[in-house]
Amino acid sequence: MLTPHLRQLALSAQGLSSPNPFGTGLAGTQAAIEHLGYVQIDTIAVIERAHHHVLWTRVADYSPQWLNQLVASGQIFEYWFHAAAYLPMRDYRFAQHRMGLVRDGLWQAYRDVPTTLLQEIRQKIALAGPLSTRALNQGHGKSQGWWDWGPAKRAIEKLFLRGEVMVRERQGMEKIYDLTERVLPAGVDTRAPSRAEYAEYLFALYLRNQAVITLKQLNHLQADRQIKALLQEQLAAAVRDGRVQPLTDTHSTQQKTPWGYINTEHYYQESASITPPQLHLLSPFDNAIIHRERLQQLFGFQYTLECYVPAAKRQFGYFCLPILYGHDFVGRLDCKAHRREVRLEILSLHLSADFRADAAFSQALRARLQDLAAFNQCQVVDERAITAQLPRN
Image (cartoon, rainbow, N blue to C red; front, side, top):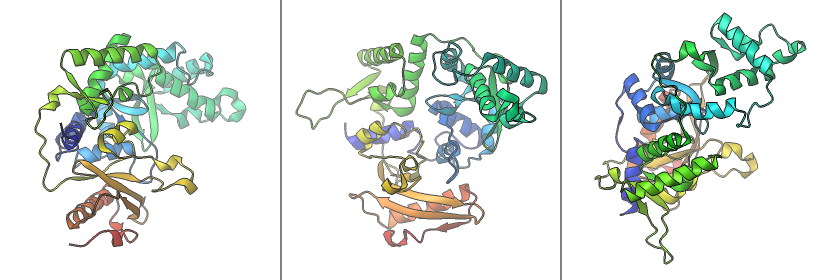
């Protein structure tokens, strides 16, 4: 099997190889989240935040208000995947795995929050109704002991992770919490999964939305050795029964050990390239690229999010976006939305050494930049820093 074919299948499984693969509007947004399994939430606001960016990439008419609407209608909920995320409500029972770890004190975070403070905050929400952390803190200065901002915030987050409160909505990035029994829709399955069921859920999720998977990807950030062992058993069973096919390095002269595995439902699919190729400017937190080693193995693209790198050591920019063109990652683009000036500034463009930017690519990139500007409530694209790198038609 040719690598371009693998890449195209992997991108198709992520909803990145055809326009509006999940439909449009609110229904298309819900379908995208249900297929992806989670959409990571992030606070960085250099451009529109990651959770909105990921969905905008796949739903052409996406509007940020739809996440609150889907939460309010009980279609999705906020919890933790490998980070804070929106998840389909149909998967709520699998969040019980982590909730149980937090309740049993087996998760490192928030172990030092006193039970008395948890009870006090829970009671306040029960009596007052939905509240933000800021509202919980009102009237309680630092002299009030545990009502200091830090402990109150930690307590509400622990209640959230334990599953006792849920996020009812967000006002901007501020979370509004309410008791779980007042948010969770009737009929939702709340049974805690066994470890085997949880591993089966994770395996099925990655197989569905990635098509090409690796063992390291399956084990990503899994601290539980039993879960890791069960995932490896899931993979071995899937190989035996033909649900996945091992992928080996055909150029290696050594023993052919698989570097990855492909979902056989995708294996024989046709993957003709779209003409002209689609161009995407992906969020650094996009589901398609979040496992960097897999990205390198499958696409030959080495990517680091440099906002976590000291400024003096950055090569490509604070928040550079991977550029996906057709089935190849061809470079990085760093930009910033100046919202008061309604101006999207393109700070730098770094194209891969083996990629030649022709007129078709230039046209596709400029068109996508206009789309990105509109998505960020900007009217002007300031591309002066990169004009010399892009040929005109």
